[in-house]
Image 1 (cartoon, helix red, strand yellow):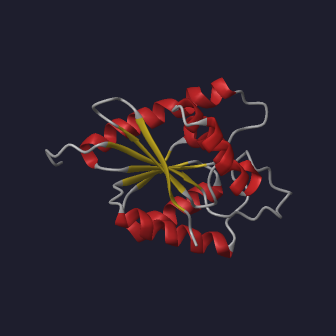
Image 2 (tube, one colour):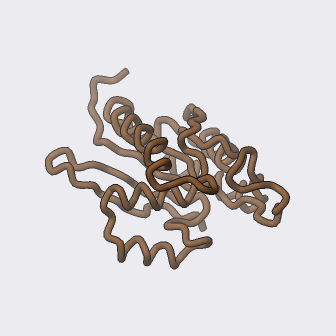
Length: 182
């Protein structure tokens, strides 16, 4: 382990494009729908992006679309991956508080890990990402603008990534949509 300290840096990453035509598979319960060929290409492009920003580790939701996205991207970026149940999709009937209770500790531990190791990625789903961005006090108008741009009112496209960085001097959050696959 290096003695170098990094900024608290996490990438909130949405899974790549799944096969939404598979209505026979619930979207919120594992395994969920698999990736499409387009999704596989998006995950590969995500991996190239993550390698360029120096990602050190990826954590992922247990749903197939997130698992496969993370595994593909990690192979390209040459980093380890680890499943985290708390990154799962927003389940039917789940409250905001329940999403926060399972997701927030993972965000905080990833931010802490990033100080020692470098940037960490959380491959998850659009609903939980939108919720966490709200908890980080993103401007609501800015969030709504992004939600109107992408499918299913998500604040980022499939395989897209938000940079979440905490300024150590002010404790303010820098929140930027930094990757949109082409």
